[in-house]
Length: 164
Image (cartoon, rainbow, N blue to C red):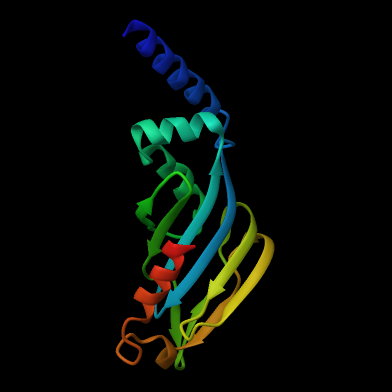
């Protein structure tokens, strides 16, 4: 029993040291952005170092939230709706400006360089960007993004994101 506690203590200490190195324990591999009207859903796929993965498996993903929030510092309020050792889903409302029948999403800085950044538009078109440090400027037609005209579209996108 004591040896198990000692091993657990050592793992936790090593994890704390690893995490104190400024978020280097979390490597963002891919971000997928889907837009709907004035809201944005991000799926962040990441890799954790071994100690951080053990910590998350043992104690949960709560300690990842500050680093995930730092990734989206350009947005006022992020809401992490799901997180696990490999990915997180973050929802943000009020990310677009409405102008002349279009929703405009201005480019916003990301807290780190992202190797692969995908944008899924409401009608299903996907654009991929590589090695980005900010979100792209995009615009969509307001009628293309309303859920009344395409029921279940955001749910379909969320299901696709969960499967990937």
